[in-house]
Length: 357
Image (cartoon, rainbow, N blue to C red; front, side, top):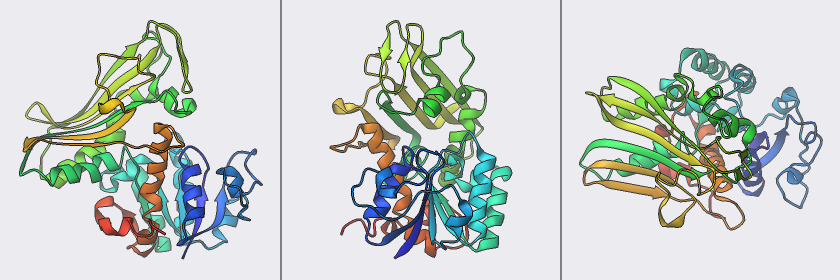
């Protein structure tokens, strides 16, 4: 049985926490929370379970290290505070504690990560003989596992398009996702952070380059494109209230270009309610979201992944699957070589162990 610490109880962390508590092959021994409203509360209370666990949330990292866990599940939002996250992760890794994480999405493709981020974490892994694995849905599954499955069905590929088409109306994350994407801003407002020059390429470019390397393709450039959509009607939803003239949908992509033509594309179409951007693609079959891979090749291959849960909105189901991408890898990561781990290193059969009990 692996001794596990859960780090954060946000949109993803609440699901990984519940999964850890429920699995018979994992033991929750510690819980980190940053909010004063969560510190001092039982883990069960923070993820909607009834029976207390006896594990009380704390913000004391040293106390969590002293528990001597095998692994930390790090799901705290980190892309806006990377230096702090590097320091936190390094403390655990240097102490010999492995980490699986959905935070710091640049590390989904560790070989493509810039030195300022990769090197200190590699040094911490070396010092503690520990491993760090980062993955999720997108970046993550749609750009690695799903696209690998699609490509395995073709004898030749001319281009690859990876898409997330989602309605984010019920996603309760305006402070990060909403603001970074610019929901509610007008065309005259300041450019949202996600769409500043180079930001998209920094977040999804690693996945594009990684796939190109795996295919043996030399790209001429990585470029990004952005297309906002502004509503002429007031839109009210969980994510945000958007007044007329505000952005309520956006389509953006990072493209790997060869000979002037995009050959690897990571594209998002994100809207608030079905009324936004009606001329853009919707998920098939009346679904609210899809992760899709299209291989233009011999033959043409299209894979569509839909997530659903009887008690969760599709965006929450996405958070649940994001948690699954790392929780399911805990045991293997604890047995892995030291250092930064890429998803292609993990045998597929290893990340389905323990799912049925």
